[in-house]
Image (cartoon, rainbow, N blue to C red; front, side, top):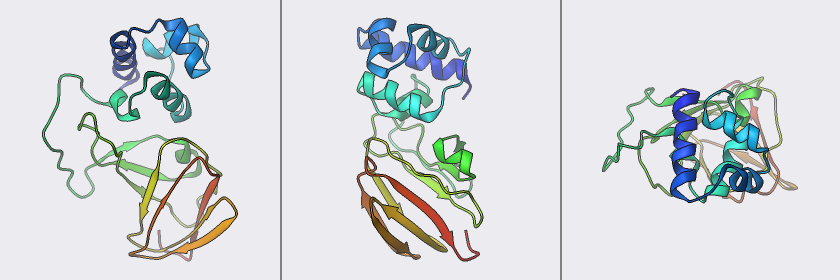
Length: 173
């Protein structure tokens, strides 16, 4: 999905919510000009900006990335066929494969996240909730001051408003 389609979705959602450019820009901590450029597809915004806009609209982030005319009863994503999405962790080398973008009004945004040995670490803090289920490898994961080692089969559910980091332990992604 390109910037114009994402921007059109944001504009449609803003108008459905009865918000002006000025009101939503203020809620999202943006200038009116920046929000207008996002809505017209003139700029590509980072995920943190999209999250602030989604919060201002009281919608899940996924609403920006779906066809507004589609409302499937289910989404089947075959192994290796999810859409690669750019998120804050992408700048550190992490790969995010979206597993259910087409489903509207979902309460969870599932991703297959791959962190490779040698990927730079980053510290993250954002809204929402996170759930991790380890498939392969080992991951050193911190939440606040707590350091955890996650192994295949482990799961972790946490509040991502607390600072969190990750780093691969060993040679397996």
